[in-house]
Image (cartoon, rainbow, N blue to C red; front, side):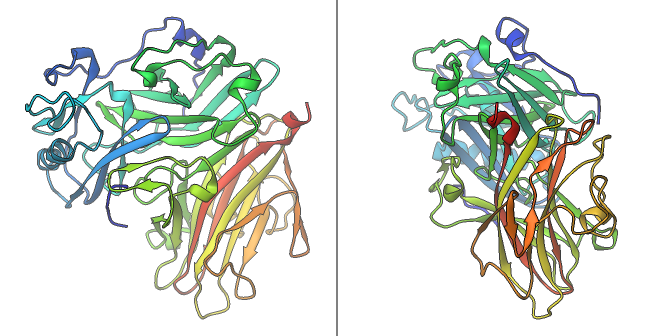
Length: 467
Protein backbone atom coordinates (compact mmCIF):
# COMPACT_ATOMS: atom_id res chain seq x y z
CA UNK A 1 0.00 0.00 0.00
CA UNK A 2 1.19 3.54 -0.59
CA UNK A 3 3.00 4.93 2.40
CA UNK A 4 1.27 7.93 3.94
CA UNK A 5 0.26 9.69 7.15
CA UNK A 6 -2.07 8.47 9.26
CA UNK A 7 -30.89 16.28 -2.39
CA UNK A 8 -32.19 16.29 -5.64
CA UNK A 9 -34.91 13.99 -7.01
CA UNK A 10 -33.54 10.56 -7.75
CA UNK A 11 -32.84 9.93 -11.41
CA UNK A 12 -33.48 6.35 -12.48
CA UNK A 13 -31.23 5.06 -15.19
CA UNK A 14 -31.86 1.64 -16.71
CA UNK A 15 -28.44 0.09 -17.13
CA UNK A 16 -29.63 -2.36 -19.75
CA UNK A 17 -30.40 0.59 -22.06
CA UNK A 18 -26.88 1.87 -21.57
CA UNK A 19 -25.35 -1.46 -22.49
CA UNK A 20 -27.55 -1.60 -25.57
CA UNK A 21 -26.34 1.70 -26.94
CA UNK A 22 -27.06 4.79 -24.82
CA UNK A 23 -24.25 7.27 -25.40
CA UNK A 24 -21.68 7.52 -22.63
CA UNK A 25 -20.60 10.86 -21.22
CA UNK A 26 -16.87 10.87 -21.78
CA UNK A 27 -14.09 12.83 -20.12
CA UNK A 28 -12.32 15.58 -22.06
CA UNK A 29 -9.99 14.03 -24.67
CA UNK A 30 -6.25 14.24 -24.06
CA UNK A 31 -4.17 16.27 -26.45
CA UNK A 32 -1.09 14.04 -26.21
CA UNK A 33 -1.04 10.25 -26.34
CA UNK A 34 1.77 8.23 -24.74
CA UNK A 35 4.10 6.46 -27.17
CA UNK A 36 2.46 3.45 -28.84
CA UNK A 37 -0.88 4.13 -27.07
CA UNK A 38 -3.98 4.82 -29.21
CA UNK A 39 -5.62 8.17 -28.49
CA UNK A 40 -8.79 6.50 -27.17
CA UNK A 41 -6.77 4.54 -24.57
CA UNK A 42 -5.31 7.42 -22.60
CA UNK A 43 -6.41 9.61 -19.72
CA UNK A 44 -5.56 13.17 -18.69
CA UNK A 45 -6.76 14.77 -15.46
CA UNK A 46 -6.51 18.49 -14.76
CA UNK A 47 -6.20 19.38 -11.06
CA UNK A 48 -6.91 22.99 -10.11
CA UNK A 49 -6.41 25.50 -7.32
CA UNK A 50 -4.35 24.86 -4.23
CA UNK A 51 -3.68 21.93 -1.93
CA UNK A 52 -5.26 21.68 1.50
CA UNK A 53 -2.21 19.81 2.79
CA UNK A 54 -2.07 16.06 3.33
CA UNK A 55 -1.55 12.93 1.26
CA UNK A 56 -2.82 12.65 -2.30
CA UNK A 57 -3.45 9.03 -3.28
CA UNK A 58 -3.99 8.41 -6.97
CA UNK A 59 -5.03 4.84 -7.58
CA UNK A 60 -6.09 2.58 -10.39
CA UNK A 61 -8.67 -0.14 -9.71
CA UNK A 62 -8.85 -3.29 -11.81
CA UNK A 63 -11.35 -5.71 -10.27
CA UNK A 64 -9.56 -7.65 -7.55
CA UNK A 65 -6.38 -5.57 -7.60
CA UNK A 66 -5.54 -1.93 -7.07
CA UNK A 67 -2.30 -0.03 -7.54
CA UNK A 68 -1.52 3.48 -6.45
CA UNK A 69 0.89 6.38 -6.29
CA UNK A 70 1.01 8.92 -3.48
CA UNK A 71 2.57 12.31 -2.83
CA UNK A 72 2.62 14.56 0.24
CA UNK A 73 1.27 18.08 -0.16
CA UNK A 74 1.49 21.29 1.86
CA UNK A 75 -1.34 23.75 2.48
CA UNK A 76 -1.49 26.42 -0.22
CA UNK A 77 0.74 24.54 -2.65
CA UNK A 78 -0.39 25.20 -6.25
CA UNK A 79 -1.75 22.33 -8.34
CA UNK A 80 1.07 22.50 -10.90
CA UNK A 81 3.70 21.68 -8.27
CA UNK A 82 1.73 18.77 -6.82
CA UNK A 83 0.98 17.32 -10.25
CA UNK A 84 4.60 17.66 -11.33
CA UNK A 85 5.71 15.54 -8.37
CA UNK A 86 2.91 13.03 -8.93
CA UNK A 87 3.91 12.63 -12.59
CA UNK A 88 7.51 12.03 -11.52
CA UNK A 89 6.46 9.38 -8.98
CA UNK A 90 4.37 7.54 -11.57
CA UNK A 91 7.05 7.77 -14.23
CA UNK A 92 9.93 6.72 -11.99
CA UNK A 93 8.19 3.91 -10.09
CA UNK A 94 5.63 2.60 -12.61
CA UNK A 95 3.18 1.71 -9.80
CA UNK A 96 0.49 0.67 -12.30
CA UNK A 97 2.64 -1.95 -13.99
CA UNK A 98 2.47 -0.53 -17.51
CA UNK A 99 4.53 -2.43 -20.08
CA UNK A 100 5.19 0.60 -22.31
CA UNK A 101 7.18 2.64 -19.79
CA UNK A 102 10.88 2.49 -19.21
CA UNK A 103 11.63 -0.90 -17.69
CA UNK A 104 8.44 -2.43 -19.09
CA UNK A 105 8.53 -5.25 -21.59
CA UNK A 106 7.65 -2.81 -24.40
CA UNK A 107 9.37 0.26 -23.03
CA UNK A 108 10.69 2.74 -25.57
CA UNK A 109 12.76 4.89 -23.23
CA UNK A 110 10.44 7.82 -23.83
CA UNK A 111 8.60 9.43 -20.93
CA UNK A 112 4.93 8.42 -20.75
CA UNK A 113 3.42 10.53 -17.96
CA UNK A 114 4.03 14.26 -17.94
CA UNK A 115 2.54 17.33 -16.30
CA UNK A 116 1.48 20.57 -17.90
CA UNK A 117 0.34 23.17 -15.42
CA UNK A 118 -2.06 21.25 -13.18
CA UNK A 119 -2.77 18.62 -15.82
CA UNK A 120 -1.58 15.03 -15.36
CA UNK A 121 -1.15 13.73 -18.92
CA UNK A 122 -0.46 10.37 -20.50
CA UNK A 123 -2.15 7.95 -18.10
CA UNK A 124 -2.62 4.64 -19.85
CA UNK A 125 -6.19 3.37 -20.26
CA UNK A 126 -9.61 4.96 -19.96
CA UNK A 127 -10.19 7.40 -17.10
CA UNK A 128 -12.81 5.17 -15.45
CA UNK A 129 -9.97 3.16 -13.89
CA UNK A 130 -8.56 6.07 -11.87
CA UNK A 131 -9.83 7.36 -8.53
CA UNK A 132 -8.49 9.88 -5.99
CA UNK A 133 -8.32 9.35 -2.22
CA UNK A 134 -6.28 10.46 0.80
CA UNK A 135 -6.25 13.32 3.27
CA UNK A 136 -5.65 15.90 0.51
CA UNK A 137 -9.09 17.41 -0.20
CA UNK A 138 -8.17 20.53 -2.19
CA UNK A 139 -6.94 20.77 -5.82
CA UNK A 140 -10.53 20.67 -7.13
CA UNK A 141 -11.03 17.08 -5.95
CA UNK A 142 -14.79 16.45 -5.48
CA UNK A 143 -16.09 14.82 -2.33
CA UNK A 144 -17.27 11.21 -2.82
CA UNK A 145 -20.87 9.97 -2.80
CA UNK A 146 -22.07 8.34 0.41
CA UNK A 147 -24.59 5.79 1.69
CA UNK A 148 -24.39 3.54 -1.40
CA UNK A 149 -27.13 0.92 -1.06
CA UNK A 150 -28.22 -2.08 -3.10
CA UNK A 151 -31.77 -3.45 -3.21
CA UNK A 152 -32.05 -6.85 -4.88
CA UNK A 153 -35.39 -7.92 -6.39
CA UNK A 154 -35.37 -11.68 -7.06
CA UNK A 155 -38.66 -11.61 -8.98
CA UNK A 156 -37.23 -9.54 -11.84
CA UNK A 157 -33.54 -10.27 -11.10
CA UNK A 158 -32.36 -6.71 -10.87
CA UNK A 159 -30.46 -4.52 -8.44
CA UNK A 160 -31.46 -0.96 -7.68
CA UNK A 161 -28.58 1.21 -6.51
CA UNK A 162 -29.13 4.36 -4.46
CA UNK A 163 -26.57 6.79 -3.11
CA UNK A 164 -26.30 10.37 -1.81
CA UNK A 165 -24.35 13.05 -3.64
CA UNK A 166 -22.57 15.67 -1.49
CA UNK A 167 -24.55 18.45 -3.22
CA UNK A 168 -26.93 18.78 -6.21
CA UNK A 169 -24.20 20.10 -8.50
CA UNK A 170 -21.27 18.15 -7.13
CA UNK A 171 -20.49 16.25 -10.36
CA UNK A 172 -20.57 16.57 -14.12
CA UNK A 173 -21.26 12.85 -14.37
CA UNK A 174 -21.04 9.69 -12.25
CA UNK A 175 -19.31 6.43 -13.07
CA UNK A 176 -20.41 3.02 -11.81
CA UNK A 177 -17.82 0.26 -11.81
CA UNK A 178 -19.44 -3.15 -11.46
CA UNK A 179 -17.06 -6.09 -11.11
CA UNK A 180 -17.35 -9.84 -10.86
CA UNK A 181 -13.95 -11.50 -10.97
CA UNK A 182 -12.11 -10.01 -13.93
CA UNK A 183 -15.26 -8.85 -15.68
CA UNK A 184 -16.47 -5.27 -15.50
CA UNK A 185 -19.30 -3.05 -16.64
CA UNK A 186 -18.60 0.67 -16.52
CA UNK A 187 -21.67 2.82 -17.26
CA UNK A 188 -21.83 6.58 -16.84
CA UNK A 189 -24.90 8.45 -15.59
CA UNK A 190 -25.64 12.19 -15.30
CA UNK A 191 -24.05 14.09 -12.43
CA UNK A 192 -27.32 14.74 -10.59
CA UNK A 193 -28.27 11.04 -10.56
CA UNK A 194 -28.67 9.33 -7.21
CA UNK A 195 -29.99 5.99 -8.41
CA UNK A 196 -29.46 3.35 -11.08
CA UNK A 197 -31.27 0.11 -11.93
CA UNK A 198 -29.04 -2.82 -12.92
CA UNK A 199 -31.11 -5.20 -15.05
CA UNK A 200 -29.10 -8.39 -14.61
CA UNK A 201 -31.07 -10.26 -17.26
CA UNK A 202 -29.49 -8.06 -19.93
CA UNK A 203 -25.88 -8.91 -19.18
CA UNK A 204 -24.08 -10.92 -21.83
CA UNK A 205 -20.62 -12.33 -21.88
CA UNK A 206 -18.31 -10.46 -24.22
CA UNK A 207 -14.72 -10.93 -23.21
CA UNK A 208 -12.25 -8.91 -25.22
CA UNK A 209 -8.93 -10.71 -25.47
CA UNK A 210 -6.24 -9.02 -23.43
CA UNK A 211 -8.67 -6.50 -21.92
CA UNK A 212 -10.57 -8.25 -19.16
CA UNK A 213 -11.34 -4.92 -17.50
CA UNK A 214 -13.73 -4.06 -20.31
CA UNK A 215 -15.47 -7.44 -20.43
CA UNK A 216 -19.12 -7.89 -19.58
CA UNK A 217 -20.36 -9.98 -16.71
CA UNK A 218 -21.28 -13.63 -17.14
CA UNK A 219 -24.99 -14.14 -17.96
CA UNK A 220 -26.77 -13.80 -14.64
CA UNK A 221 -28.51 -17.00 -13.71
CA UNK A 222 -28.65 -16.58 -9.97
CA UNK A 223 -26.32 -19.56 -9.58
CA UNK A 224 -23.64 -17.84 -11.64
CA UNK A 225 -23.93 -14.22 -10.59
CA UNK A 226 -24.78 -14.93 -6.95
CA UNK A 227 -22.89 -17.54 -4.99
CA UNK A 228 -23.26 -18.24 -1.30
CA UNK A 229 -19.95 -16.65 -0.43
CA UNK A 230 -18.71 -13.07 -0.04
CA UNK A 231 -16.83 -11.29 -2.78
CA UNK A 232 -19.44 -11.87 -5.47
CA UNK A 233 -20.15 -8.47 -7.08
CA UNK A 234 -18.17 -5.36 -6.18
CA UNK A 235 -19.86 -2.05 -6.96
CA UNK A 236 -18.03 1.28 -6.98
CA UNK A 237 -19.77 4.62 -7.56
CA UNK A 238 -17.74 7.82 -7.93
CA UNK A 239 -18.33 11.29 -9.27
CA UNK A 240 -16.33 13.32 -11.78
CA UNK A 241 -16.15 17.11 -11.86
CA UNK A 242 -14.00 19.00 -14.36
CA UNK A 243 -12.39 15.66 -15.28
CA UNK A 244 -11.27 15.04 -11.66
CA UNK A 245 -12.60 11.82 -10.08
CA UNK A 246 -13.70 11.56 -6.47
CA UNK A 247 -13.07 8.62 -4.24
CA UNK A 248 -15.61 5.80 -4.51
CA UNK A 249 -18.59 4.71 -2.47
CA UNK A 250 -18.40 0.91 -2.49
CA UNK A 251 -20.41 -2.15 -1.54
CA UNK A 252 -20.13 -5.88 -2.11
CA UNK A 253 -23.42 -7.54 -3.11
CA UNK A 254 -24.34 -11.17 -2.58
CA UNK A 255 -28.00 -11.59 -3.45
CA UNK A 256 -29.96 -10.32 -0.41
CA UNK A 257 -26.83 -9.36 1.56
CA UNK A 258 -24.70 -6.28 1.04
CA UNK A 259 -21.45 -5.72 2.86
CA UNK A 260 -19.26 -2.72 3.25
CA UNK A 261 -15.60 -3.62 3.56
CA UNK A 262 -13.15 -0.82 4.22
CA UNK A 263 -10.79 -2.16 1.57
CA UNK A 264 -9.88 1.11 -0.17
CA UNK A 265 -8.15 4.28 1.06
CA UNK A 266 -10.32 6.84 2.84
CA UNK A 267 -11.06 10.48 1.97
CA UNK A 268 -10.10 13.06 4.57
CA UNK A 269 -9.92 10.32 7.20
CA UNK A 270 -13.52 9.16 6.60
CA UNK A 271 -14.38 5.68 5.33
CA UNK A 272 -16.27 5.30 2.04
CA UNK A 273 -20.06 5.77 2.46
CA UNK A 274 -19.79 7.28 5.94
CA UNK A 275 -20.13 10.83 7.24
CA UNK A 276 -19.15 12.55 10.46
CA UNK A 277 -21.61 13.88 13.01
CA UNK A 278 -21.29 15.77 16.27
CA UNK A 279 -23.27 18.01 18.53
CA UNK A 280 -22.97 21.65 17.49
CA UNK A 281 -20.90 22.45 20.56
CA UNK A 282 -18.47 19.69 19.58
CA UNK A 283 -18.10 20.58 15.92
CA UNK A 284 -14.44 20.45 14.93
CA UNK A 285 -13.44 18.51 18.03
CA UNK A 286 -14.29 14.99 16.84
CA UNK A 287 -11.38 13.63 14.81
CA UNK A 288 -11.72 10.87 12.22
CA UNK A 289 -8.75 8.91 10.92
CA UNK A 290 -7.98 5.97 8.68
CA UNK A 291 -6.60 3.09 10.71
CA UNK A 292 -4.37 0.55 9.03
CA UNK A 293 -4.35 -3.05 10.20
CA UNK A 294 -1.11 -4.98 10.22
CA UNK A 295 -1.35 -8.27 8.40
CA UNK A 296 -4.13 -7.04 6.10
CA UNK A 297 -4.22 -7.56 2.36
CA UNK A 298 -1.67 -4.86 1.53
CA UNK A 299 1.10 -5.76 -0.88
CA UNK A 300 3.86 -3.15 -0.35
CA UNK A 301 4.74 -0.67 -1.51
CA UNK A 302 2.21 0.45 -4.12
CA UNK A 303 -0.32 -2.36 -4.41
CA UNK A 304 -3.20 -3.79 -2.44
CA UNK A 305 -6.14 -6.12 -2.94
CA UNK A 306 -9.55 -4.79 -1.86
CA UNK A 307 -10.93 -6.91 0.96
CA UNK A 308 -13.52 -9.60 0.29
CA UNK A 309 -14.11 -10.60 3.92
CA UNK A 310 -13.91 -8.51 7.08
CA UNK A 311 -11.01 -10.51 8.51
CA UNK A 312 -8.92 -9.37 5.52
CA UNK A 313 -9.69 -5.69 5.88
CA UNK A 314 -6.63 -3.49 5.64
CA UNK A 315 -8.33 -0.33 6.94
CA UNK A 316 -10.71 0.66 9.70
CA UNK A 317 -12.45 3.85 10.75
CA UNK A 318 -10.98 5.47 13.88
CA UNK A 319 -13.05 7.94 15.93
CA UNK A 320 -11.28 10.21 18.45
CA UNK A 321 -13.08 12.56 20.84
CA UNK A 322 -10.05 14.84 21.38
CA UNK A 323 -8.21 15.67 24.59
CA UNK A 324 -11.20 17.38 26.22
CA UNK A 325 -13.75 14.87 24.96
CA UNK A 326 -17.00 15.41 23.08
CA UNK A 327 -20.04 13.59 21.69
CA UNK A 328 -20.04 12.51 18.07
CA UNK A 329 -19.01 9.82 15.63
CA UNK A 330 -19.86 8.54 12.15
CA UNK A 331 -23.07 7.48 10.40
CA UNK A 332 -24.30 6.05 7.12
CA UNK A 333 -27.76 5.49 5.68
CA UNK A 334 -29.14 2.52 3.77
CA UNK A 335 -31.63 4.04 1.36
CA UNK A 336 -34.13 2.85 -1.23
CA UNK A 337 -34.98 -0.26 0.78
CA UNK A 338 -38.27 -2.13 0.50
CA UNK A 339 -41.17 -1.01 2.67
CA UNK A 340 -42.47 -3.79 4.91
CA UNK A 341 -39.27 -5.83 4.67
CA UNK A 342 -37.24 -6.89 7.70
CA UNK A 343 -33.51 -6.17 7.81
CA UNK A 344 -30.69 -7.56 9.91
CA UNK A 345 -27.63 -5.40 10.54
CA UNK A 346 -24.24 -6.71 11.58
CA UNK A 347 -21.10 -4.72 12.27
CA UNK A 348 -17.78 -4.86 14.12
CA UNK A 349 -16.56 -2.25 16.57
CA UNK A 350 -13.65 -1.85 18.95
CA UNK A 351 -12.79 0.38 21.89
CA UNK A 352 -9.18 1.37 21.31
CA UNK A 353 -8.48 3.58 24.32
CA UNK A 354 -10.63 4.43 27.31
CA UNK A 355 -10.42 7.50 29.59
CA UNK A 356 -9.96 7.32 33.34
CA UNK A 357 -13.34 8.87 34.08
CA UNK A 358 -16.27 6.46 34.30
CA UNK A 359 -18.85 8.45 32.35
CA UNK A 360 -17.57 7.54 28.88
CA UNK A 361 -19.43 5.33 26.41
CA UNK A 362 -19.20 3.92 22.90
CA UNK A 363 -22.45 2.72 21.38
CA UNK A 364 -23.72 1.50 18.02
CA UNK A 365 -27.25 2.25 16.86
CA UNK A 366 -29.57 1.40 13.96
CA UNK A 367 -33.02 2.89 13.39
CA UNK A 368 -35.51 3.55 10.62
CA UNK A 369 -35.72 7.10 9.34
CA UNK A 370 -39.00 8.95 9.09
CA UNK A 371 -41.25 8.80 6.01
CA UNK A 372 -39.55 11.89 4.59
CA UNK A 373 -36.17 10.11 4.67
CA UNK A 374 -34.58 13.11 6.36
CA UNK A 375 -31.24 12.58 8.08
CA UNK A 376 -31.37 12.02 11.82
CA UNK A 377 -30.30 15.11 13.73
CA UNK A 378 -27.14 15.16 15.88
CA UNK A 379 -29.39 15.42 18.94
CA UNK A 380 -31.24 12.28 17.90
CA UNK A 381 -27.98 10.40 17.33
CA UNK A 382 -26.73 11.69 20.70
CA UNK A 383 -29.87 10.22 22.37
CA UNK A 384 -31.04 13.68 23.44
CA UNK A 385 -34.15 13.71 21.21
CA UNK A 386 -36.46 10.83 20.37
CA UNK A 387 -36.08 9.00 17.06
CA UNK A 388 -38.73 9.57 14.34
CA UNK A 389 -40.13 6.01 14.57
CA UNK A 390 -40.50 3.73 17.58
CA UNK A 391 -40.85 4.39 21.27
CA UNK A 392 -39.75 7.56 23.00
CA UNK A 393 -37.09 5.59 24.86
CA UNK A 394 -33.77 7.25 23.99
CA UNK A 395 -32.10 3.82 24.03
CA UNK A 396 -34.33 2.75 21.13
CA UNK A 397 -32.25 1.32 18.29
CA UNK A 398 -29.11 0.72 20.32
CA UNK A 399 -27.28 -2.40 19.17
CA UNK A 400 -24.34 -2.32 21.59
CA UNK A 401 -23.03 -0.30 24.52
CA UNK A 402 -19.47 -0.23 25.82
CA UNK A 403 -18.43 1.68 28.92
CA UNK A 404 -16.22 1.37 31.99
CA UNK A 405 -17.91 -1.93 32.88
CA UNK A 406 -17.38 -3.54 29.46
CA UNK A 407 -14.98 -2.81 26.62
CA UNK A 408 -13.38 -4.76 23.78
CA UNK A 409 -9.76 -4.23 24.92
CA UNK A 410 -8.70 -3.15 21.46
CA UNK A 411 -10.19 -6.14 19.65
CA UNK A 412 -13.01 -5.89 17.12
CA UNK A 413 -16.26 -7.41 18.36
CA UNK A 414 -19.09 -8.45 16.04
CA UNK A 415 -22.58 -7.31 16.99
CA UNK A 416 -25.92 -7.96 15.32
CA UNK A 417 -29.59 -7.21 15.49
CA UNK A 418 -31.80 -10.24 16.09
CA UNK A 419 -29.97 -11.10 19.32
CA UNK A 420 -30.16 -10.45 23.05
CA UNK A 421 -27.21 -8.46 24.41
CA UNK A 422 -26.64 -7.69 28.10
CA UNK A 423 -30.22 -8.70 28.79
CA UNK A 424 -31.69 -6.44 26.09
CA UNK A 425 -33.37 -7.77 22.95
CA UNK A 426 -31.86 -6.16 19.85
CA UNK A 427 -34.63 -6.44 17.28
CA UNK A 428 -34.23 -6.69 13.54
CA UNK A 429 -35.70 -3.64 11.79
CA UNK A 430 -38.99 -3.98 9.92
CA UNK A 431 -39.68 -0.91 7.82
CA UNK A 432 -43.20 0.51 8.16
CA UNK A 433 -45.11 1.35 4.99
CA UNK A 434 -43.95 4.70 3.68
CA UNK A 435 -40.41 4.27 5.05
CA UNK A 436 -37.50 3.07 2.92
CA UNK A 437 -34.31 3.97 4.81
CA UNK A 438 -32.28 3.00 7.86
CA UNK A 439 -29.49 4.92 9.58
CA UNK A 440 -26.62 3.22 11.37
CA UNK A 441 -24.35 5.29 13.57
CA UNK A 442 -21.54 5.06 16.10
CA UNK A 443 -21.67 7.38 19.10
CA UNK A 444 -18.64 8.21 21.23
CA UNK A 445 -19.23 10.27 24.36
CA UNK A 446 -16.61 11.35 26.86
CA UNK A 447 -15.26 14.34 28.76
CA UNK A 448 -11.72 13.08 28.13
CA UNK A 449 -9.82 11.52 25.23
CA UNK A 450 -11.55 8.41 23.86
CA UNK A 451 -10.84 6.33 20.77
CA UNK A 452 -13.03 3.71 19.07
CA UNK A 453 -13.24 2.05 15.65
CA UNK A 454 -15.54 0.29 13.17
CA UNK A 455 -14.28 -1.88 10.32
CA UNK A 456 -17.27 -3.62 8.67
CA UNK A 457 -21.03 -3.51 8.25
CA UNK A 458 -23.53 -5.85 6.62
CA UNK A 459 -27.22 -5.45 5.79
CA UNK A 460 -29.32 -8.56 5.09
CA UNK A 461 -32.85 -8.46 3.70
CA UNK A 462 -34.51 -11.28 5.66
CA UNK A 463 -37.74 -10.92 3.69
CA UNK A 464 -36.00 -11.76 0.41
CA UNK A 465 -34.39 -14.78 2.05
CA UNK A 466 -37.83 -16.14 2.87
CA UNK A 467 -39.17 -15.83 -0.71
